Amino acid sequence: MQVARETDHRPEAVGKYCQQFNKLNRGVENEKGKEEIRIVTGMKAHLLDEYLKIMEAHKAALPP
Image 1 (cartoon, helix red, strand yellow):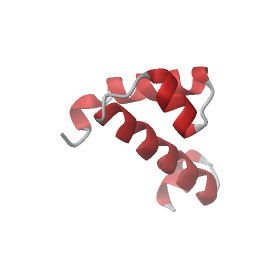
Image 2: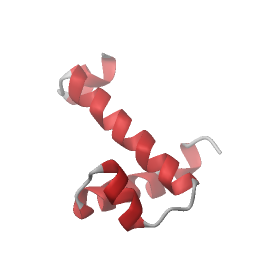
Image 3: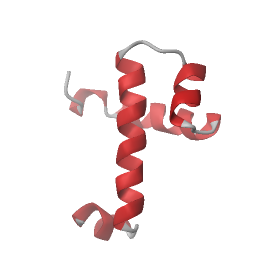
């Protein structure tokens, strides 16, 4: 709820973003290729690239 307020997004949208991130993160952890991750998540290529950039930028803060 706090993230939704701070980002001015609906709670449902924030939940969807988190689900997408978790799917993407599992693909990265399992060393899947971008195309396979894109198919599994249903993300468009440009959106997948944005998520990957965010992950790379915050890699140090993510759990191992």
